[in-house]
Length: 465
Ligand code: ADP
Image (tube, rainbow, N blue to C red; front, side, top):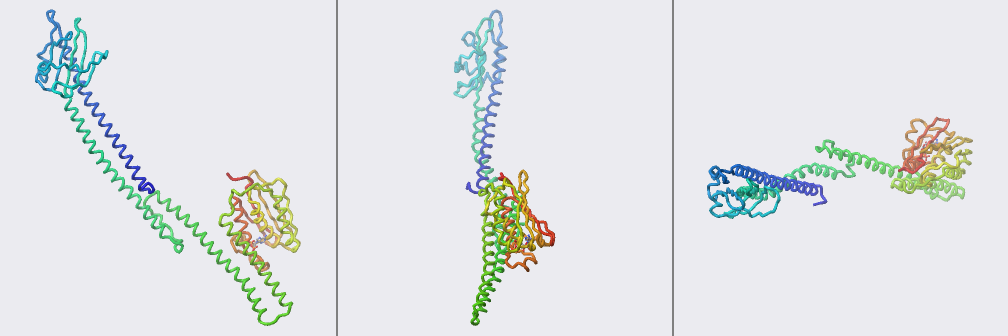
């Protein structure tokens, strides 16, 4: 129950409803108790004051004008209304029921210093009564005036109210919990509809989207986020499919070249020279395949998140560039291209060293490969407070403007490159871009046909927080 939103909402709402109702019930009970007792106490206090006012002295005797007081409720025995006046401890006057039963009224013997006290006691008929006792001195005599009132009815009202509360509380809680459950159920209906729509999406219907007309406002943004996430998954899914398609296509050509060489060789006996020539071609084609497989492996590793910022360290760019120039030297010598860098010692980039070398090597190799004979490649660095920019400039064939947007796509090869250099895979720049982006960096190109190209890689100099 606690694992579901419905359960949590229901339990939460029910607890709050019960607590609020209990608090309201208790509050009203004590408020009514206070009001009822306060009104009885006020009335008794007034009666005591009236009785006090009626005590007077006449011809040297203290008298109490009974006629006015005894009239009314006090005159009726068992009326529930009582008074008694003591003078020097002796009864001066008392209401009919007290006269009859000689009831003391003074069950509260508190030694309170105050003149007037109020207390609850038991009346002559065994009922609960409220008593106001007032002590004072008049004409040198000690007077005590009691006024009392049966509060059986008041207690009855309170008792009935308590009974109503005890009955109404569980009923109210039950009804309100039922209403909360209904509200929760109705509110979550949209969630159920949404989740069934999401469940219906499979790899075959991955292009479907959740309609943005979801009734509940909060779920609209959930639906939007889901659509955005689905869009990303769809793009990755399609890229994966494209990659498999392209990889199979790229592998098919060299394999069929090897196969046809073998078929031709096997047709009849060949001379040693012919065998050698065929083996040379097979070797060349299989080297291309090895490059392709190596690049595909790199991409697969990168796509599966092999580059984690946790594995990044401060790396001296100068040493990396030295290593890259050494690695590219055989190709540069073959094509008579000079490769140099002008990086200072202290330039540091925060990265995975091996992957950075792989990325830069792909760019520098291209700069040599797509250069003119006797051309040159210059690598420069520019350091700012937060970034390091590495620019690889060549004097090569240049890249047509239309191609500049596409050269980072997987398997994309420029027309001239595909025509003149058959050992490319079209994956070098996309690997470089993936590595650089994983470092939080950027790569861009500027190029002019027959003048040369300039690739600029910008990488963070420090750890990103
Ligand atoms: P590959 O070099 O194997 O073809 P890349 O992904 O490394 O694949 O490069 C993609 C394309 O970008 C190349 O086919 C080429 O047309 C173009 N290119 C990359 N670097 C350069 C460069 N320095 N000069 C001219 N063209 C380049």
